[in-house]
Every structure is written in C-alpha cells, then in structure tokens.
Length: 262
Image (cartoon, helix red, strand yellow):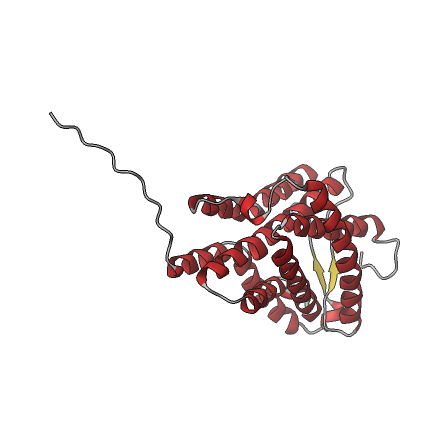
C-alpha cells in the first residue's frame, strides 16, 4: 500500500512583467484612475466660460444635502471604500512574503513617526499654502473649498477621518508600494521618484496647475525622505496633519475670513 506524499510548497518570485501588470491593476483601481478623472475634470474647468480662479473645487462635499444621517452613512462608506486599495496592497505584499510593515506602515515607531511627521507638515504645509494662494491669485488654480459638509455634530470627526484616509491611501500606494514595485521591476531611483511625483500631481490636477505642481514637489520630497527613512509612517502622519488642519480649519473659519470661499 502506497500513500501519496504532499509536495513541499514552493514560492516563485513573480516576473517583472507580472509585477508591472499588478502595479497597473492596483493603480487602475485607485489613484491612477483618480488621475484620469482629475484630467477630465480639469479639461472641463478649462472649457468653462469663467476663469479657473472664479471656479470652486469642493472637497468633502455633502452626499445627501438636508439629510444628515444619510449623509453620514455615505461619508463613512466612502472613507471605508477609499482604504480598500491599502488592504489590497497589504494582501499583495503578504503574498510575496512581506507585509505593510516592510514599507514602514505600522506602530513600531509611532512617536518617532509622529514627531518627524509634525516637523514635515509644518514645512510642507506653509509652503504649500503660499503656492496655492499664488496660483489662485494668478488664475492658474481653482478656489479650493476643503469642506462642503453641513454644520452638524459629526462634521469634524468625519473631516479628521477623511484626512487620515487620504494620507494612508496616498502614502502607502504612491510611495511605499509604488517605490517597492518599481524598484523590483528595475527602475532607477530618479525614474521612481519622477513617476511617484507625477502620479501624485496627476490626481490633484482637478484643482488646477497649482495643485499639480505643488503636489509634484511634495511627491519628490516625500520620496527622498522615504528613501532615507524607509518608512511611510512619518509621511502618513505629515499628510494627515496637513489635511486635518486644512479641512477642519476651513470648516471653522469659512464665513469668518474674507479670503475663504463659503
């Protein structure tokens, strides 16, 4: 009597071609698609009868005006759905024998990450605001309204959650995952940094030229820091702090400060 013995499992490293296909799929389901959407939106803005500076791009808009509980349900749905590409990236990393910890998305160095992120947010946030105001005044940018949510009890928590969702999605996908995959495919560091920066700028193009250029510069800085730190944790913290200040600050100041659209 003979028994069949199970063959030992083997792990095969995907080819560069398969890694490239995987990368295109992930981007096509997430921020790559957002880049195409932003390009179409910008083309529409350019063909409007009024100039870019007179148009408003509203972030975090109400999903059900006049129906706050339904609006809250939609807000939470989109926040959760926006994190699904991060879940997919985590799964793909585990499949190759790595994890999100490999790219520095974990809580092992939370205080260090938060400290570095705070300093980075202060540097990037101030210069970014100056660039936005200059581009908007020159007519190259739409007026960005960071919140269109009603004045209800859940507005601030939802804005904070949206800021962290943006930060986690963008830094995990556009820096940690993209850099890793392009490196495995064989790209050079200058090419990787350029690709990451262009991608980051592309899905902010709906804001105008200022949004494109400003976020490309931010992308270069973030990639260089990731190359040095090997962690997306500080980048997530910095991005979340920048967006939180923008979203919550706007919600509290709109209507009270003359240069903010309300």
